[in-house]
Image (cartoon, rainbow, N blue to C red; front, side, top):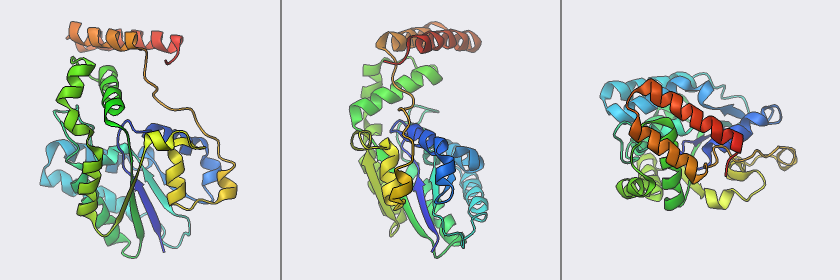
Amino acid sequence: MLRIVVHAGFHKTGTTTVQKTLRANARLLKPHLRVFLRQQMRAVCESARIWSVSRSAEDMARFRNEAELLAATWNANDPRPILLASEDLAGRMPGRRKLTEYDAVPTLMHGLVETITQVHPDANLQLYFSTRAAAPWLASCHAQHLRAIRMVMDGEAYAESYRSSAKLDAVIQAVTDAVYPVSVSRCALETSSPRPLGPLTPLLDLLDFPAATRAQLLPQAAANPRYDPSILQALLDANRKYSDPDLLKATKRAILSAAQNRGPQ
């Protein structure tokens, strides 16, 4: 039976560290697992991001079509399970393109599950989500927005405005309802981080990954550690000061370059 596990997010819950660890151990993983990261399913991920903003029937049809094309490439006779791992499968993160919630996720997961099941009706399909406590998750999202977009709210204002977006367990419950009877599991970053392979560990558990090979895998340092508050303040000041996109980009590039020289805090 073809086994498929989908790790669709959430953003800022160790997903980049999971993907970094998968890439670093690709040679050891390949005999036991077929891994699809964003690079291997770019069209599916991008169409999910587009639909999360537009909510149009045309864009949902495009997302399902891209998922169908991807699933059609999977050899059902290959005994290795399949792992899809990208937070972009959950669409854009709250705070981007006027999104304030993860309310797109249940519909995206329903569409993905239904499409994969149509292509591989006998597959054992499971969904997995990594989560994080509300306060550090909101702080991490805010820091990401400061770097990537022209976020002008400070951390306190952001946390207040986007507090409802941090109810990740409620989103998972909505996903569970949307994809029933497909199994949906979760693990908090606070629980997975101390484990031997960090946030990848619960996924390997879910996949029944061979213990002997698991012992050979190399853990990776946490990706995207949060910068010192002074760096975040400098990014916020730049976002508030400069409206010209090129000047803002250059200023933030200089701030982040200085931060790299200092090292993460």
